[in-house]
Image 1 (tube, rainbow, N blue to C red):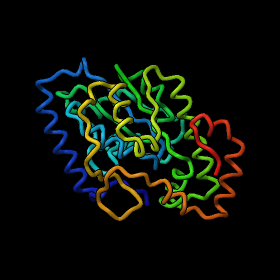
Image 2 (tube, rainbow, N blue to C red):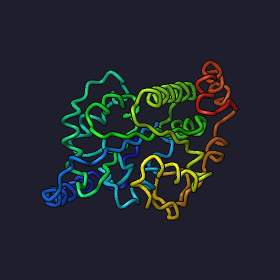
Image 3 (cartoon, rainbow, N blue to C red):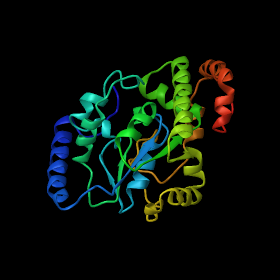
Length: 269
C-alpha cells in the first residue's frame, strides 16, 4: 500500500477542513496578486519532503499541505484529479484552473511565497508554469541507485521497472532544467553533505528564504526507525540494500543511458 501519511482518512479530512476554514477567514484580508509560486520538482524517494520541510521553515512560505508527504496531490478534491493510477501519464489532461482554485484554499495569502510539491509535477511542469504566475522551480535529483532502492522497497517494483522509471524521471528533470524559465537544480547529495552551501544557493535563488532553518530535526519519511532526523545522507545505507542480481539488472539499463547519468554527475556503480 502506498504511504500517504500517518493520519487516518477521517482525521485527515477533518484536519484539511479546519485548515481550509481558517485560511478562508484569514485570506479575506489579503490579496495574492503579488505572491510567487514555488514548485519543488522531484522524483519519488529523492528527499523532496525533507527539502519541503526546510523551505517551509521560512516565515515567508505557505505550503499547501503540511502533513504526511506534504503534497498538494493529496488534498481533498485535488486527490481525485491528481492522485490517480494514471498520474504519471505525461499526456494526462488536467484542469489546472480548478487545481489552482483548490490549492488557493490552503495557501496563506499573508505569506509571499506559495509552496507546492507533488512528484508527478515533474512530467507536466511546463503546463504548471503556464497556469501559475510568477512561478519558480527547484529541480531536485538524487543518486539513482538510492532512488531505485526506495522504489523497490516501498512499492515492490522490480529492479528492471525501477531502473526504467528512474531514467524516465531524469529525462523529465533534464527537460525541466533546460526549458523552464526560472529554475534551480540541486542534488540530494549537496543538500545533505554541503548543507550550509546548499542553503546559501537556495537563498541566492530566492532571497525571501533567508531565514530557513537547517539545524532542526525533520520528520521526512526515511528508512530509519526514528520519527525525526537531522539532515543526514542515507544514500550509502540505501544502496547497500540492493542485491547483487538486481544491481546487474539496473546497470544493464543504466549503461544505455550513461550520458544522461553524466548530465547529473552520476556514475554507474
